[in-house]
Image 1 (cartoon, helix red, strand yellow):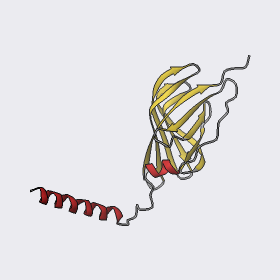
Image 2 (cartoon, rainbow, N blue to C red; image 1 turned 45 degrees about the horizontal axis):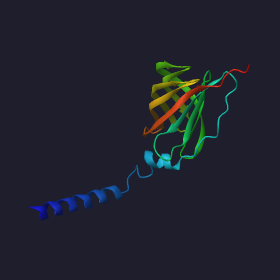
Image 3 (cartoon, helix red, strand yellow; image 1 turned 30 degrees about the vertical axis):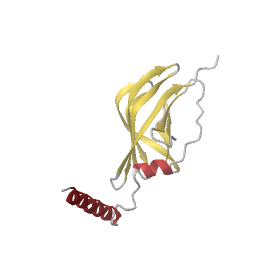
Image 4 (cartoon, one colour; image 1 turned 90 degrees about the vertical axis):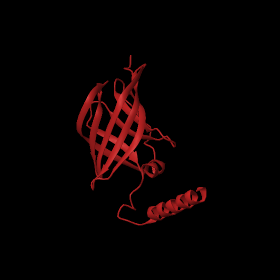
Length: 159
C-alpha cells in the first residue's frame, strides 16, 4: 500500500510539473512574487510644512517603498516591476482615514491600481496602515495583488 501511494504521489507530482512547464497564453505574466522581487523603490518623498502623505511598502521581503500620494491631490506615484509610474485618481470609497480614504482606485498607462487597507494605530503626526492591499489590474484584466503596509503622516507646520 505504501509503495502504491508513493508511486501515485510521484506520478501526480510529475504530472503537475509537466503542467506547470506547459507554455500557454499566460506564460508571459509575472506572478506577484516576481513583481515584488523585480520592483524598484520610489525615491524619498519630501512633504512641505503642513502637508500630509500616504506612504506604502510591500509587506514581504524585499520590503520596498512602492506607493506615495499627497493629500489634496488626485495623483500618486507607484513603483512596481522596477518602473516609476504616475497615477491619476479615478474613485474613492471606504472610510475616512486622516485626509485619505481607505479605498482608492487610480488609472495608470497600463491599467488600474487599487489601494485598500485598514487603519492601524495612531502615531504622533500620523497613523499606521495595516492589512493593506495594492491591486494591479492590467488592461486585459489580469490582476496582481500585493500585500502592503505603511502610514499616513503629516509634516508639522513651521513656527
